[in-house]
Image (cartoon, rainbow, N blue to C red; front, side, top):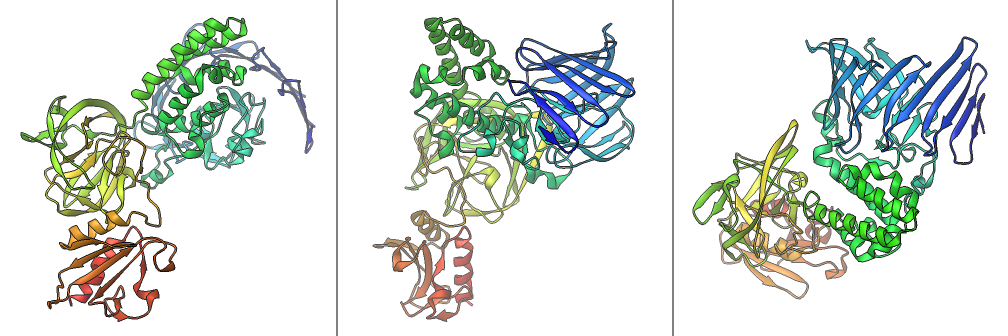
Length: 609
């Protein structure tokens, strides 16, 4: 294959074995697992030789330059992806040491000099600073990680997307494979088959599905969509927050992985299901479907499962099948599946949480959430009926996170995780990370309070958070105001566990019943169900015997394609948003949106003037 003045040659396994240009020729050699073990470049100046060694898990542990300069890598295997902690020479002397956070490398110590890393939204190193906070180095990249410009001379290998750049060969080391940024391709074929519903993922060599500004590939197997770029507006931080969102990232990756390994019984990827749905799919699909996927991938993807303590189990399944010991394979697979089931009940459950000082309304008054215990009774509410009562705490959960959402309501701050659902009037359960200024929350007293602002904070060190499961209605009240929240496990619109409305925002509106209840509560109105919607009669602020009538109509009513509302008095015309009577339905029959409550309030206030 020829590109420009360079000629590329590949072996039968799809590995790049030579690159010949006008001024140099490079030969590449690989081991039985298609891992690069030798790069030899010949130029008129001489030969540059680089050799690599890997551990049993496929992690690079040694590099030898020109058969003399030895670099041994001390690798941490207890993280989502293997990370280099130290570099040492052949005699064991320390060359460099690295400190990692959930964002990646944050500190390098080399020859007694410390350098601190600063990232952009993709996780790429943009700045290095010294101990006085002075900038020592800067980096600018093109889309695939080639350095366009830089300043400073600090030795630094962690560059594009925070990954390790090997200057000796000009490639990024992405664990399973090496990526050549000059062409935006991997040098070896992807052993993972890809996702059938993502055609670009079927390409064997493309980096990040040819979308490097939005996706990353830290494993070398599959691209991961960036999930937190919105956080970059608050400074140069990494949006790859592994502790908080890394599991979400891996969850999305595993959706495709599991779908490729199971021949039937799972549609979590298309349905947007959670990892719980996927694990349930594994169970219902059976051991055979789990085992008879692409067998090569079971062994090659072992590093991914190591992060969850399943590495040995996965390899055991692979070895048993390879040796023809199918009964043993089934037994080992059962262990792996049961372990996945336990993981599903643990780390992958969306039990969102609050910080320890958060007050909870209990039978004994307000208690800090850290003091809530099983068998305690807390006040709860059925959001559909409005019924309130004491309900028993079934389970208590404690975990650590690196990101908090600060929700401000009536001058009070609520500190919670981004997945914790709040009841938003007229909408449904909305996760804290999706709350917006102006959203209306329900209190224990029945009052409605507006969200003043929402802020996101990311921490280098973990913060302990708490939550608990409430029997029956699965809701409780937090803060002295008594804000209604859900205990967050498989919540639906009724506060019951099970599959239901996940509280996802949309530009339209579908729940006219909830909307009508919100209007009735907001204005102390009388709610009546109609054939095609609901009517709320509200006392007229301008006086008189005729109430203001708000009609909230279902999709299809009046031939309209989505729910709408209109406001009238005595059936004589309807009002525009400015509070003016009009017979023009285009101005008075208003489509329901997330801001319907604010719009109705505006109309009523204008009528009262």
